[in-house]
Length: 348
Image (cartoon, rainbow, N blue to C red; front, side):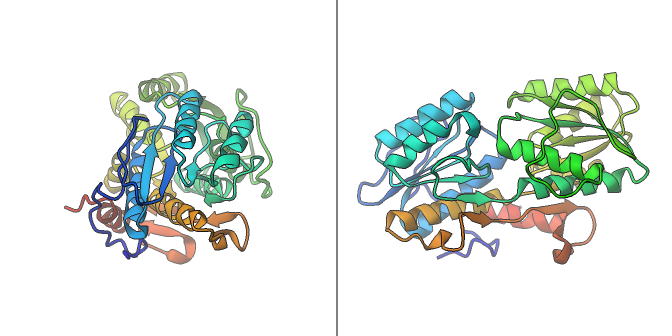
């Protein structure tokens, strides 16, 4: 079995892990168990997660069906229902709108093993959650803002949607860190208002609903509307690249600091080039890998994965141009990118 943590993952074939990214029916080997891995959209982040899911399928001898909904909750609902109808042996899903999907998720949980990944649905009957504390990750983003603007300043937050629990918690973590608040993942500042602290002002939160063109135009609008803005924070994988494109068009690269989330190639290159302060990364590869591993165990009546609770923690890290410091969960961009390319079969 390949060790998923060593970065030396062999190229994955589709023979044992046939999948699809758009919900079309895929062919699977009938003698193997089949599990489903459902994302909350289409993004580079999920390509990495799919690589992990495929590798786990190969390692554990199962089929995996990957579904990436392009158009929001209704697409995700359809894909979940299709997987249930296909009688898969388990499903891992990143719920798009958990507050309004509880009935759907509970229905799925009645028919097969259900876990969540990336973003949780704690009020549902899912068995457990594979991911990180998005609130802590948000506070880590806030720490990067403090490094970028040590004397304070104003900033804008960009994110796909706030219906997702992970997005809400990341945003709140940023705000609480900058306002020097106590640790409280349950706190929530409603969007649509300016939030000011002693040193930092959050001008607003812009949501694009996974529309990449809109993500760029929102960044462009913010640059025009707030010429003295000190920083821009992008909380979904595609946000920082679109922010950087907008800044390049406005000839403001370096003038407005960029703080990212996730590991899009454009974001990592910007860190190397000095155009992005840093990015907070999850481990989407391990989200995919662990999800398939756990579902395989559950399908074989092994529930030991959640013996110590219903949360499998895969902690966030900061990727920066400086030196790696594992004790502070900081990793150098070149070291990080090398391992990422190995895992996804994109080695130079």
